[in-house]
Length: 352
Image (cartoon, rainbow, N blue to C red):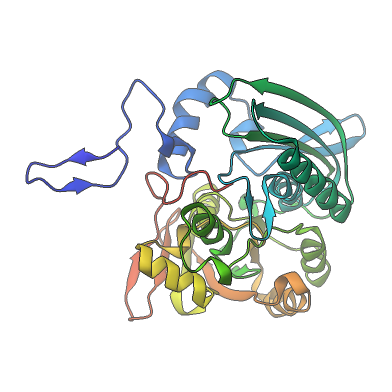
């Protein structure tokens, strides 16, 4: 949806009518935040939900567990490097890991459209099984629903995960302090551009494959290298790196300054984004995370990430600052500084 201006130009920012949901509400940006703030939290709000993290820590008798849930609506269902089933497992396992939890088990719910071939369904479920084995978890419960042809876009998958909280490892935005170093564990923008190239048949698809992966071993390496002193973790999926950093900055009330020259953007991603007029900071990722660590631990943390195959492209990209609390800024390659804000909507919908 666009807004028409008086001189005939069109504004690409989605304008959300007051009476209905628009596609941009699923972006992970400003419209998503407004949807949650105005339509969910007034009815469902509680202190735990209000933290709006990757998961929630809840008491279960003498144990503390972490719960996380996610729904996957990616289009197309299959792409270079994985499929919707791979994303469904890795996405939820990674959300548990971002909370410092050890994943224990998952549930899976399927909304299947009439007409989906069993061949495609079997590939998706087999990919889920393979990803679960790699992550060391089992799918212990599930549900299936079938909707009429034309009402489900193949299949939608919801996965809910439960993990065991680690009292000695509790990353969260509330722990971020000015001076903390910002690390990213790998190249950015790869997953989103892979999906776009597969979806639209663009010529750069042969160079890209989704980075979807279970990040638990990489989080373990980071935890061990820092003796558990990791301030915050977030996987920059929907909304990309920019959204993840803004979420942490807003929740911690700390400013974040990153450096454009330090960002690990592969050439294929940079070229594709330039050709299409997209900003890689807002492109979805599925195989990396953002970490805030104390300055004294930064070198050891970066070495530990780079020693693991999933973290070979890890970089130090910035620092938490006391100035401009709640804002993310970037020193550009041209010597200037710009604000890295949340987008109103989504550059690339239906990415995960």
